[in-house]
Structures are given as C-alpha cells and as structure tokens.
Length: 387
Image (cartoon, rainbow, N blue to C red; front, top):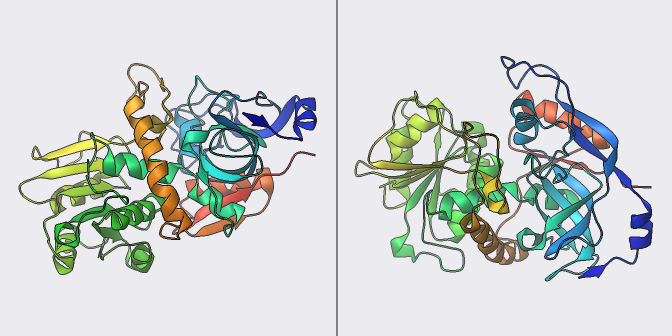
C-alpha cells in the first residue's frame, strides 16, 4: 500500500461534499417519475479513511455517470444520509496492486447498501475495490471513463456468464469458433447495458441480435449487433428470429432483457426456440406477465451482487441478496477479460453526454433520466474538486 504525497492535505480535511439521500418522504403510491427527488447536496460527509483497507484504492472522483437506479433506489428503498451514485472515474491517491498513485481508474460502487452508507460516487473522494477497477486509457476523457464505469460491464458479465443467468461458455479470451457461433437476443440493444453486452458477445464469438427502436438500430449495430429487430413491431419475436436466421443459425436459445417489462418479457420468451433455453433480465419480473415458458430457465441479474457484500432490504424484499463469492469472482474475471479489450479499442463506452453544473448538474440529470428524456446517451457530470 502506498499513500499519496498529498495525503497531509487530505488528512487535514474531515468532511467532503457529496450528494446524499435526504429525508424527504416519498408517498408509497407516488411513482418514481413524479414528486421530489429524495437527494440533497451535503458539505458535511465524512472523509474516507486513510489508508484505505487492504486491496482497496482511495480515489479523488473526477467524474460520475448517472444510472436509473440513482433515482429509483432512494425513492423506493430510502436510506437518508447515505451517499448516492455508482459509476465513477477517479485518480488514485492511495494505491493497491496493480495500480499506483496518479493512475486513472473507473468502476462502480453500489451506493444503496444500507450496511455501507459511504459507498457512493457522487462525492469528492471514495474508497474502491482495486480488483474491480479498470485502468482508463490515456486517450479517454474522464467523462468516457465514468461512462465505462462498472454497472454496465458487471451487469453484462453476470447476465452472460453467470451460472444462474445465460451461462454462456464463450469468453473474449476464448471465443467460439466461427462455425460454433450462435445468436443471442439483446432486448434493449441500444441501452447502455445493451451496447456493453453486445460488445462482449461479439468479442466472445456470438452474434448479438438487438431489439431496439428503428431510430436506434444504427447505434446497436455500431456496438456489435449482427442483426436488429424493432420493438415497435407487432411481430417482434418473429422478426428477431428472422434477423438471427439472416446471420446464420436462427435458433435463439439465449435472451438478455435489458428493459424488463411485460412487452420485453413476452418478446424474449417468444423469440427463444421451441426446445427452450435461457432468459436473463435486469429487474424482477411480475408474476402476472404473460409468456413464461417451462422450457426457458429465467434468471434475474443485479449488478450489486458483484461487490461481494450482502445487501439486506428485509426478508420480504426481492432485492435482498446474500454475499456471493461466486458473483464477486466472476466480476474479477470480467476485469481480466475487459481490460485488454478496452486497451485495444474493441470495447468502448456508450455515447457520452456531459452535463455542466457540478452537483446541481447531477440532480438535473437524474430528473432527465426519471422523465424519460435520455435516449442513446450516457449522462456524465464532472465532480467539483475540493479546495
């Protein structure tokens, strides 16, 4: 472990500025798209400890990317006072292998674990797990590093390679041979999660078939989709099968649902071959949704399982998770798979839209996300630096 030469100035500070969950009450019957955001700017958040725990980095956060869970989790599962934000790009102040002071890194924290209220990227400083951090290429901006973050690729790793999800055997380091390539449906192929999944699928020897809007089809193809189908089509499942057939073997046996609503669920189930397969989604499906099939094994993926920490929202919550050493190990494996792809330009972040305004810019951006005003872009805000 090494500490930054600026650590005396760092240790002279006892508090930092961050966006934290507020105690604004959100009525249970209020939808996430309405009412006040339960977030506020605080100038009295404790500084992270120095030195950080073994195997961890102390970083100065340079930029943070915004995700839907940054407004959903504080609304539905509030924890007043806890730091918000997940995806980050930062510079190392106190290092652990394989990094050194001054390196730029990116990754994600899970800010909504009640047992770890200081894990959040909407802050000037943070402590992050070195094993779950990626080195940011010299040619990337801080905003691009934050857009790469960690939520997208940890989600993709769990969904594509996790035993309880799609359990695909191909990896970028050991891709399928061309003769063995098979289609994988990516519903929401133009979302940030979808473009990341498609890039990893292509690098692993699969043929991503993206379901997106007609306006977003070109973006999905730019990020690796071999074929596309429109979610607006009444025959989207059949269209996806035809797109798969046009690229080779048309038997879709695996589907990743990055949207997870009744329509996407039905389309994915309908597109999977008659003999069955696997379906992975990024939200807990409603039992009332039509289309479920006994021949299709379904799995729900939550990126925070990759942290290796238990997340407890109560025994009745579908979001409570025990600590998963298997998910953590898979995330560490994903770092080893992903870093070479980033270094040689085969994996790039979702298109970046940088918002101005610092802390207020984050709050504005979350309102934009909540209002459905963002399409085909990743919102990123530079973090105001400590004086």
